[in-house]
Image (cartoon, rainbow, N blue to C red; front, side, top):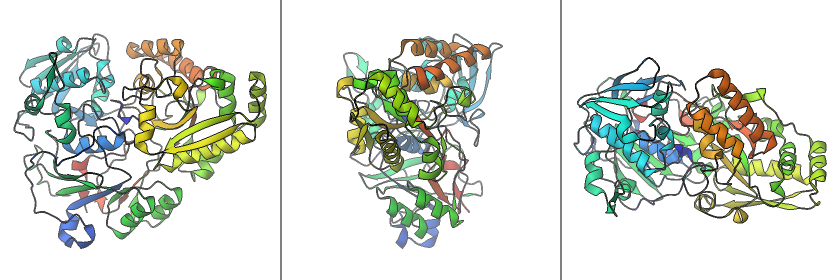
Length: 552
């Protein structure tokens, strides 16, 4: 599920070898776009990204960048339809329906689909895929919630192409949960069995093999990997949807590691890349103004925020409140980020149907109130705090700079510390005690689907602390909030859910702040106008339905 673990590109297992043995569907193309023949270049999609993902296993890898790869190689039963965050459409399922109280869902599966290693996709393969993800544990949060604690007996193979899912409670949002690309994509059971390692009677589900290899039902296969340089995909020639629908879909996809922002801009401008992550406000605006590139003007389902580690002076909630009052939310969103972000109003995105948004408590930029709170808490002037952020994404640094300026005016010092992504992630997702963590960290999170529990549980529940691939890296813990999260897991009464959301908002924002919720960003991706078919879904952050993309 929670991919996203956030900084977007989690360092997991390094890709050290070419993956698999795909069957290329087109002649070899030069990976240098500048010297490719025009026809070959038109059939090749090139992406320039700040770093290369590190793990191909859709049941393990949690970052947005890795999820981008998974969506080319693997599929699930359903997917979100276009830009909708609530409506799903069948993929490997042909149809699905629920009983009267929506506690049992029946999925009729598509016939004739094969994995790239020749294995059949059927109900047994689907059940095994879900059990693999639950048992591995890293991404199980997405679907564990709906298995009644007994996935072996609650996922029932009715016949070769029928899977019955029993939740044990009314679960109207199960299809939306299965529509995410985090923890719902199927690997070949044949490949898993062939490459698994068993120790003390327990399978590793071939995690080592799937880290560097792929066997899915998706439209593309891995042709080659050059660590720290590029990954190349080619068409799956036996893909069940086929390639002859009249659209010029891509024969090859090249994802390049381009750490330098100015180089990504140049590649996009010159036509040597079709898609790029543009991380500076100036570059993004300049490229959009040319009229040659597509971008999104709506906020993502994502919050960029600064975590609070409850240690030292930050144990006192008044100090965390003071810090929150010392941040210029409107100035940051409208000026520093050039209007490409919406000021934060809640711990979760305002676009979510379950979001409380501005109905709850809101901070203003109020230095007098911040000073008064620090005096009440007895914090000595000149106290220094540390703020850690990862290299490569300018907004984390800019958030820190805005906060640094505000804290200086209320007598606090903020030391900004930058680390490469691997080091940052080792700290954030490691197993350090709270005493060894930075005071503040730049972070972001988005949900798998439009759901309060799915968003809040990974990043704020006490159990989801470090070393689990989830987002509670600052070790936040609040017993009342934990209880509210658990209550929301199975609650369906709208009035009770509303009360849960509003109470959780008050705790996380004011009574016991877990972070400073700075802004809701827009997608930083730009796409050349010649590439069509990207729906700009706010849940699918920095990832693509590669089969849906085509050249016009």
